[in-house]
Amino acid sequence: MDNLFTSRRFLQYGLEEKCLMAGVARATSRGVPDCVVQQEARCKSDLEKAVGTTRFARTADFKVLAASVYDAKPVHFLSTIHSAASMITKNRKVWDASAQSLKEIDFERLNIANDYNHNMNGVDIADQLRDHYRFDGPWMRQRKWWWALFLWGLGVAVVNAYLLYRRQCELRKVPKCKQLSHLEFNSALAEALCGQCKVAASNLFTSSASAAKKRSADGAVKVSGYSPRLTPNLLKRWVSRTVGKHSLLDLSTRVGDGGPCQWCRYRAKNEYDGQAPTEVVTYPKARFGCKECDVWFCGPACWNEFHHL
Image (cartoon, rainbow, N blue to C red; front, side, top):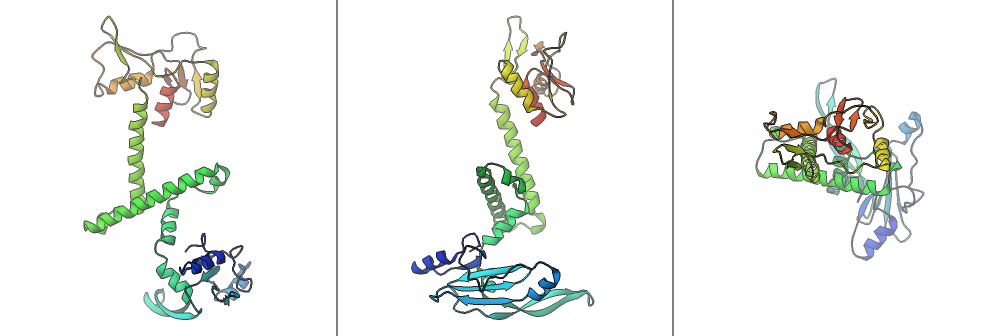
């Protein structure tokens, strides 16, 4: 198990339920004996002395084995699987700069750490894959608590989707050179989701330019906007949400005609495959504009769709 779950009390409970467990543990408040706990080195000289230090201990009931080893930093273990802690010899290939080739070296590793590395299944691997391109960060500490849960679940779902994609590639014998990397898969997934969001968002506006065409008595096509009825409080709220360079500019105080809504004209033009409409079309009057883009809209809904979709 990962250190999120491992504790002395939990391992003792698992032993009563005939379930043996082992994993890395946090040094504080998880039942690791004080004689096993190693403090992190403060300076380089202390680090050189501490690297390789190993400590072992058993609980008073001899049921839980505790161990710690100082690698790049102290790592603590709790286990009911192992009856004893020992160092085993391992072999690894490293790059020899002088010989410009790989060279095999022997080194010692704690047996509990070795078993944990080879039998942890997907616990730490899943965390590593999620951490490569995670959505949250330090700013999450200042947000609502449920944001952390939501983004964690979203990150896990993306990682699982990537693993399923790799599994399907293996089953279909797709060459690795033709498979998407983790970054490429996430980028393709984001583009696909954004594409779906655009379609869904445009469909939400039931009175959009494409759906709100109305033919008047004289045969002209009238395109109605999809902005709600404007009130002083609504206008104040809209303006407060659009601060910065692309702030919402109210044209109602200006003298003269603001002209038609340019975004409604653009949407209507797309209905005719990019060509000018063959019919006589009237568009809603522009009431708002963007200072930065110099584009005029019939309402904040058009302004929002232009800037975000």
